[in-house]
Image 1 (spheres, rainbow, N blue to C red):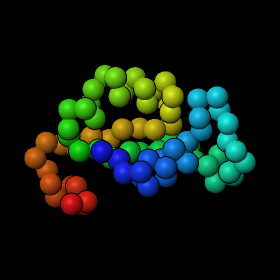
Image 2 (image 1 turned 90 degrees about the vertical axis):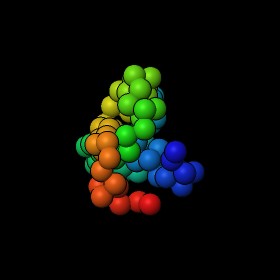
Image 3 (image 1 turned 30 degrees about the vertical axis):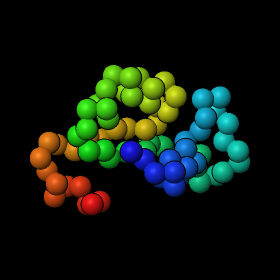
Image 4 (image 1 turned 180 degrees about the vertical axis):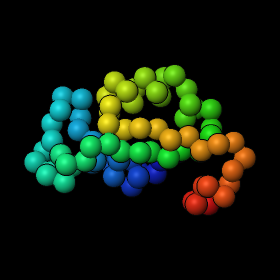
Length: 75
């Protein structure tokens, strides 16, 4: 689950679905965002993938392999 701070940071980096940028030049220069997730089934669901593709096409989901805690530096 993404914390409120993490969610606000993520949403602050991407444009909304109408393409509003609210004048943030740093945001407009970001080409692609890689969001690294653990291997929980909800992260890999078609619903999540479809929503990300539809509303935030610059976000690329990176799912960590199963049983690889050494790659998850948080925790």
